[in-house]
Image (cartoon, rainbow, N blue to C red; front, side, top):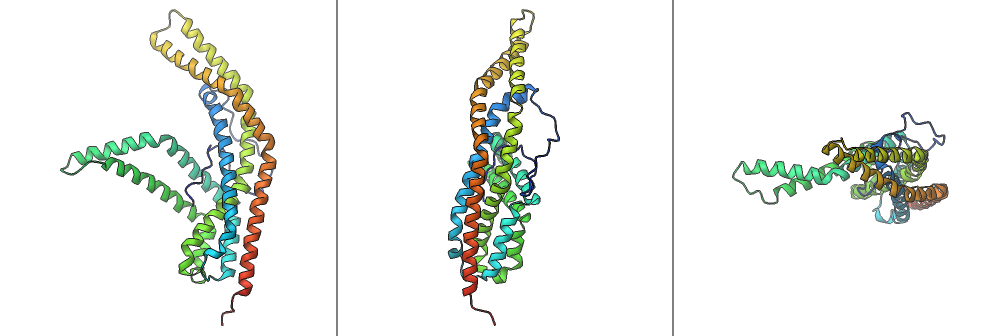
Length: 308
């Protein structure tokens, strides 16, 4: 799968393309928990960024569909058509959607923790290397980079294992032609990713945002209460120095979150009000691009000499 495809916040439940009815959440809201409330404004911003990134990914991928046939060298066009259809359908299936969400959870975690993980890997490697008479310069950085590549490759392999279109390429490799397998694989990745974005991720982002906005009032009360508790500790002459240090930290964090909350809520509500239109536009762009691709493939299939 394309490694640049990021969906941001890992809040979504599995949603198939046919699932338009919104099911109630299976977990209680954490809006009354101070740690969640502190992260809430940033999470709103992340969800907006995630939606925009998915929207852009779908648009970029869809725009490239028209070039796909010319990139292939004399394949069996009927076989290519079946593979393209499989890639399109895979993007809306629960199996692929769940795999995408699992991968995104890994990517989100690793993106947030990459620097400390790199430091630990580099430190461990360099320590081990120093125990032996070998050159250690840059060894830690090399190992950390290898971890990055290994994670990306493992996630890509896992996506391919859950994409029936990749299996179709393997099953039809003679018809596709050895010279086309790598190119067609990359095309299938992009078609599936775009299909997933417009059929699952963009509609799901609307549901995620609705759920979060429904917590806004409770989150604000939680932050204000936490701020008040911290202020009370700071005003208590009998409170210990460590307790006051913690209270100062809590008050500053709550104040920062409250300061960002109104702006984030305003921008999130503006996005929510425009989400349906934007999602429908992205779906139409994708559908039109896919229809154009299939039309070109059909035309080439008709012109393809019959095999005796």
